[in-house]
Length: 183
Image (cartoon, rainbow, N blue to C red; front, side):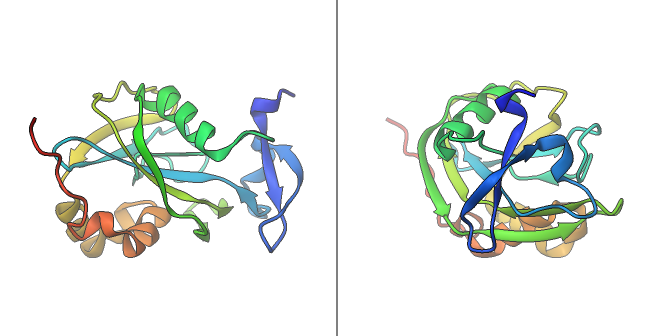
């Protein structure tokens, strides 16, 4: 087992209490563990949404935020965000900031697989176009945040539950992210 295949287990207060193989933590009895989510915005103020690969254990084929992941043991969360941006989407990020440092959720998908995570939420910018890693991402689209907000409200079942919950708390979806001005 390599360190890259481990996730950080947490107690109810969000303190690290150990590690477990990633392959064992997503099931019907998922232990609370550390993860992260990231919403990527381009120069036009559009947010990148992705469709999870069909091979994903949880919510396969579902539209979600730009990307998610798990930090390795002892890996700073920001480093994990940058690593996953490159691994999943070939993106270099800038202006990375934590928007919801204490976001936490528990949700069960149609197959009975549980997500149970303390999941800081980041917003970042990029000048890149995504290059999809097919093991992680089936499809991706740049969308106007306001249009996504309408879709999330009208059809929340078509999106990952964490995206729906995060959108309810983020200003990203109410037009508060300004478009970058042309130089």
